[in-house]
Image (cartoon, rainbow, N blue to C red):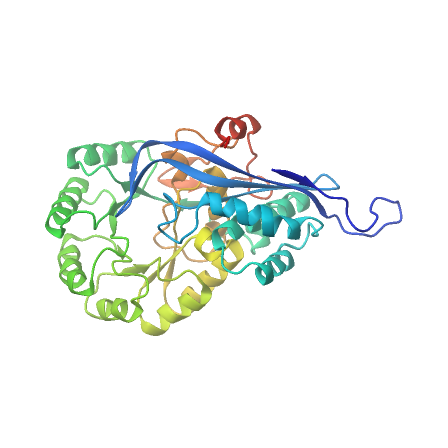
Length: 390
């Protein structure tokens, strides 16, 4: 949907000092097939849907962002259809006429009018920061203070459930230097079967790469402790969010009873959640995800709090295209410490992409684009190809 608006003040005279303002916005839903079935603990999908948000200004500035939820509204209650409706009816009017050089104040205005809805807000903020970076001729990472690295090591998701097939896939990812670690979803199968898989993968890897696991909140506290003990014996890197997101005290008890690191994801979606996790001692690692936090700047606040309170940040994903992946890379490369890297692997899972030059994966890491803003340019023909028509 396209909307154009004439600014309420006259802009354009030679003497005018009025700032450049947004005068056109657009949001479209796209559906891109995965290369193979992608499994979560309780769901699976063969395609990813996202909301692509675009902004233009009177002076010709432009910005693009992406809002993504994994496999429908099960994770947060958000869906691309609901995000589109919220954007068109409530956020779009607040963007029209907004200054192009004020992402922070603009998001503050949106926050006062639209509670929650962090996923669509992440896409809006991404587009605003992309626009500002392009206007200034610098990457978003420069706006965050500069880069500490030029890439982010990535872990590849193992999802077929077939051990032989998964081992072949791991070999291929290592041989082609597209991943440096692997992550396995647990919780859909009985623990005994899941443990057979983990032991087989660790034996096959034989020290060539790290392995992490994610039960996606599938275990009870009683189930989690013996599972953690068994997993620790295999030598895996860490366990992500084994308990339901609201069970912060139980996560703390679990963390106190084992030396295997815990990563909190669903349980920490804001800076307040991050402080709560730190106060409880609920995890040693914090998963950062732009969508759940509401954008790059809120994620940066979470990362700083995590580091200050002794947790290590980790760059998570909701399986974005190269648009959202580039945004995550801008943040990841601006963080002083990122010991486990992340899993921003969406472009490798997609059958196609929305940009002219997709994110590159070299030496087991996603490479930071070098251009201004997000560092990448939207491919108009691909956007039209994958745009949902109804």
